[in-house]
Image (cartoon, rainbow, N blue to C red; front, side):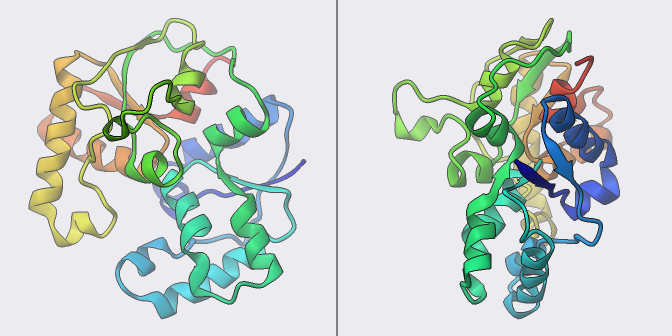
Length: 246
C-alpha cells in the first residue's frame, strides 16, 4: 500500500513528536509511507468559524496533495473526520470522492486495515483514555455509552490492551466532551475550561499519571488546563505510547 501521512497543522507546529511517532510506528509496522511536503491545514478551523468559502481553497489543495495515495493516514480523528464528512462543499469529482474514502485515522488504520491488534510496546504507567467526540461519534472508534449497544469495541482499547506494563483505568464518564471544540474554546472560554476541568477531575479521581487519546487537539486543551493549575499529569497521543520501546 502507498500511504500518505497527513500531519495536521497544529501537530506540526506544537507537537512534532506526535508526527514523528506516527511515521516511525507505520514504518515499524511494515508500511511504505510518504510525507507530502506541501501539505498544510485541511481547512477545519476556517470551516468551523463559518468561513466556508476560504475553507474550500484548502480543501482543494488537500485533495491535490493527497490524490495519489491508496490510504491517507493521520493522527487526528477531528481532522480526518473533517475531510471525510465535510468536504462536500467542493465539487465531488472522482478524485475528491477517492480522497474522502481513503482518509483514515491512524488507530483505525492499524486495527481495521492492517489487521494488527498487538504491538510490542512498553509504557509502565497508569493512564486514562480521553475519547474525543469526533473520533467517537463521527468515526465510530470508541464505545458510545448512550447507545447501550452490547459488545462495542474501541480501537484504542484494543491497541492498549497489549502494551507492557500499562494500567488502563475506567473513568466515571468515559465518553464526555472535554470542551475544546476548536473555535468553541475561543468564543466560549469559560464554558470550555469548565468542561475541561470536569474531565480532568474524573481522571484525577482515578489517580492517573497520563491522559491519552487519538486527538491531540483535545489533549492540548486538557494539557493547557493542567499546566495552568499546576497539576503534574502528562498528556500523550496514543501513537507515542504505541511507539514507545517498540
